[in-house]
Image (tube, rainbow, N blue to C red; front, top):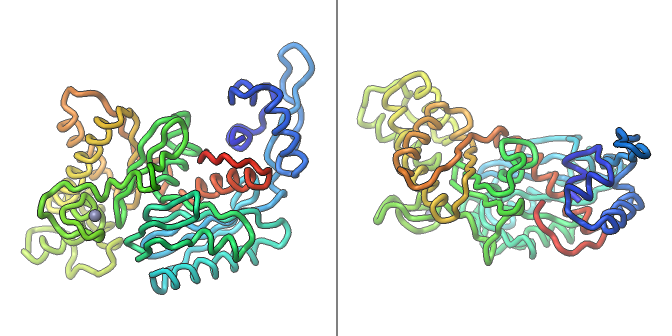
Length: 387
Ligand SMILES: [Zn+2]
């Protein structure tokens, strides 16, 4: 079904050949989508001998979805029509975290975005991208250390409040899907996406679908332990990759260097805002500052260990890295490539690339996922693969 969104305008014959479904199943699906107003005819395609085939495309006027992309400090909320064109976008900082505060702030932003978009067309679904592990089937955030959520039925609460399906997904899995729909992962069915920001997470796509693991906790690369007795992590363990290499670890490392009065162009005193510190280090490293370069190399080297472990375990070739720490830094990426080369040795190959989408653009992958899941719900299709 997603093919209509990905490859529109598309003919019925093209859908049959690309999906591998029986022609009768495709015809039935097109009829149902047409009756629900979700798909419309968009003219005629080129004939390959017989009649000109009818082309189909999603009908944007059928409704809209709202996507809310949560980071550790703010949420980006947008409405998108049923053809996944952006209608409205806003970013708001969290006033507080924890179950009640997060739930009420999300509900309020959804309300505001819905009001500025609707009532015509109608809201058909809500998607939430969460920095943490989620039980997608039951709409529960299992753990989000950054948002201080444990076993919070965020999806269920919002579904009851707004009367529409709510799609909950782990932020790195959303990033993986976004790159597959619109970025560096186009055409790839199997890939790993590694997100490096305030935390480190990863999303695994197998056969084009998110691999959630048994309980929804797959891809927790940030909480794989790489240093026995290493620095304390937000999860309570010591020496996790996240505690060694994510944004706060990079900022703390810079703070120690400045305290030691090492010769660096990184300014001091270090501001408390991690994102500001990291972008300052990234800029200094790209301008040739040796201390800033060594701070980023330290993080990139740990990340390379994580990626090599992944590639060895899953035998997957394509790895996409992204997130605030990686997306603006040529230095970080080249250090990562260097370490990866070293650790991979002659055992296998990996194709590493930087995401084509910035972290702020992942919301478009979230809305695309939400449209598909909402359409499935509207048509009563119960099986819910993530793409
Ligand atoms: Zn941890």
